[in-house]
Amino acid sequence: MPPKSKRATSSRAATVARRAPTQAESEEDLDQNASTASTTRPVAKRKQVQLADDADLVLAKCRELRDDLRRQSAKKDDESDYADASASEEDETTLATLSSPNKKARVGETKPLASLKSQKIVEVTEMNTTEVMEGIEHVAINIAKQVLGKRGFQLEIPSRASSNQIYVPELDRIVLGDKRGTRSFLNVKESRKAAITTRVLQLIHSVLLKRIHITKRDLFYTDVKLFVDQSESDGVLDDVATMIGCTRSNLHVVASDKGLVVGRISFYEDGDFIDCTKMGVGGKAIPPYIDKIENIQSDAEFVLLVEKEAAYMRMAEDRFYNRYPCIVITAKGQPDVATRMFLSRLTAELKIPVLGLVDSDPYGLKILSVYMSGSKNMSYDSASLTTPDIKWLGLRPSDLNRYDLPDQCRLDMTENDIKCGKELLKEEFIMKNPRWMKELEIMVKTKKKAEIQALSSFGFQYITEEYLPRKLREGDWI
Image 1 (cartoon, rainbow, N blue to C red):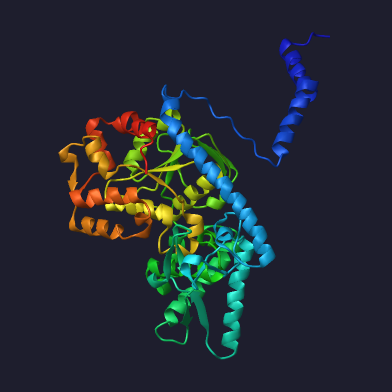
Image 2 (image 1 turned 120 degrees about the horizontal axis):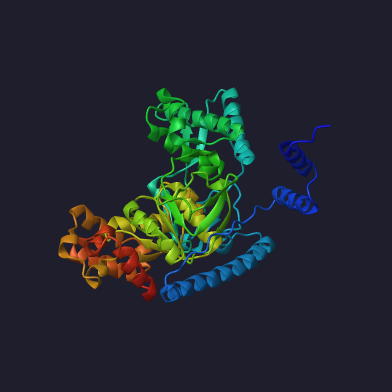
């Protein structure tokens, strides 16, 4: 009998090895299978990076701010727990329960506040898909009953008019009052808006039924003849959210992504692991589906909120977040809903301070105000869209002289700039902070403004190598 070739012997040995793994290999496979089957997602270990030599010195005051923030948060949680217990006994709502992130309002519930005297506010709450669908179906049933009664139909909708937008000092944000309006199909002036509202309700219900998300542009193109302009369908979206009592994101209709994030944070997005230190120079686009983000992990000391994309790109390319552990976020100007909601969630879960870096002009300050106190258009959902107590790091009017910014980099304010600055001086969120008032007064008095990029006159990397480290080391924020 001819001897077997070496190739045949090797092939058979490999087959045997595949069929009969060693005990150690079997145990390893079992461990891997158990890990895969586990309901708890594994936390990936981030690669260790070299911090700046002066990191401890630079971040000392920032860490004090972080620790103070966490102590205040813990104190509020204790007060909120006590208030919740008292409310259940006395059957009344207090400011503490309204401010608590763990307390959810009932659909359409109004809340009394001390500063508003007898006036109440309306706030929406997070709802799951089934709850939103049931809310839409409830509206549809009411419409059907009115039509069957040969009365046409009329919708009752919370008013989002400017006169119903209220800034509440206790909450430090803009909220929606309890005034309501009607939209009647039998009224010639209101019939088209009533038709658009019912059409949007129908489209949203079909989207929720399929458990998918669409953009506001998608919604507009489903019935261009009726909507005519996207602003019509966009406005009705907010009306529907207030009618149902849910956040706008719960309707599964979102705006295109705009914000960017890079730095010391990781999370799972719809099952995919995202490490924002490994997303290239441009970072990660902030998804419009914030509800799909889970298991957020971070070792950052603070969040750096940047107005301009150009400044953000400088920090991303220089890997500033590795030298001084932080998370860098930008909405490329006026913030969108997704970026505001993402920032609010980060600070609620990580409990780290947010430092704002904006242009030294009235519009930079307005952008900070939207992040902090909310916007009038979305006042009904301000609880989930606002991030209180953002610190103004720069570029501040006093920095122009303090850092000897060249005269050619100091721009003359326009008449509109000056008018906007004077109007801001009358805003409550500015008046409550004397140091902000002082900075804004300097701006209006000197009639000079400057962009963040003006710091590049000292060198392209001056902002990451000199300006920010000095600001952080001195705790120079207000």
